[in-house]
Image 1 (spheres, one colour):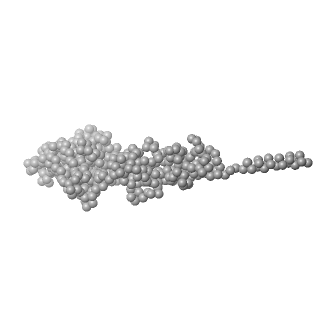
Image 2: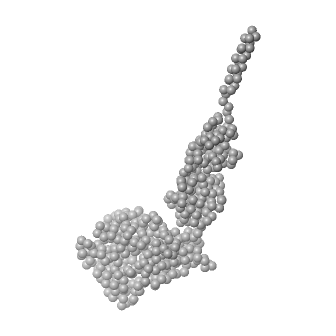
Length: 463
């Protein structure tokens, strides 16, 4: 009997011990933390910080940049100078490569997940940068005040945090995103030189050769900004020739569009008988630049010997103009430069045959222009200046002809181009030499007409 009782006790004790040790021990799930384990997080927002080169840090919780953009501390900085978790040579990084040392962005109160492969995280941190026109920008790009504010958008996907053992051994976190609006260090700059913007986009319907067409007048996006004008190409004296304009005529004008400056004082600039006169608006953000120089008086338009009435001087070209805006103390604040390579004189409303016009231009010491002096349009029979337009109209370019640069010439009321649309050029039609080419000053379209007609006027050019 004693032996039987002992056997039963041994059996039951063994079963009780087995039942007790087979229960799973429930601990704590791993979690994200961005303060060394003091706080557990359920979102990935902590990945979304940026730092400036002076050490200033911005996080989603302290981001009011949509109304007050962040200004970088130094001029000439690129997006690579802005610190973040996304490497400078990429627009994305796996969260799994960020979670462990040296960042230690996770915790587990049970000590689970230790070791080099003890923790795994799913999800990615992605970066996009766009300028104020919503165009993508590279990480190496230097910020330009004319394209600011920029948007730096960091997006962290949702995901899971998993340890190799422990119960529970995983947790879920939510996606997060933030957009920081950023400006470069503010230095005043001329962003655009804006002549007539009629016929400067791809949504204007015009009549060409009796047909309604909607051509594309836009130049390359690096040179021409739709509805805004020519983009400043250079701020260096040695390369001002890259800027608009390279051609000029009396009383043509354009606006300088300036960012980062108030009202300034602008002194006129004269080179070889050509003067650029500046008139700023009340805010100083727009400055009208008017060119004045040699021109033909109305009494000369209808004369076969205009030089007997008045000498029209011929400027020595090219000439470089540097326009300087100064504050009241005389300090240079902003500059814009250009190099004039050609000067044109309009005959106004003096219509004649192309042969008569050629003699008129020679009489004043100028020459009759060719197609390339006026437009970059191209057609089978003849081509204008390069870079060529992709259509039969001009496309806005610097250094590709008078009409190509200045746009619809009839918009400049005092420049004496408002009387006629077409202007004779020196070239004759290759298939019929009784026809001569002319160019529409509003669209740059190249047409032809019998040489014997007096339907239109002329413009003369030097050199």
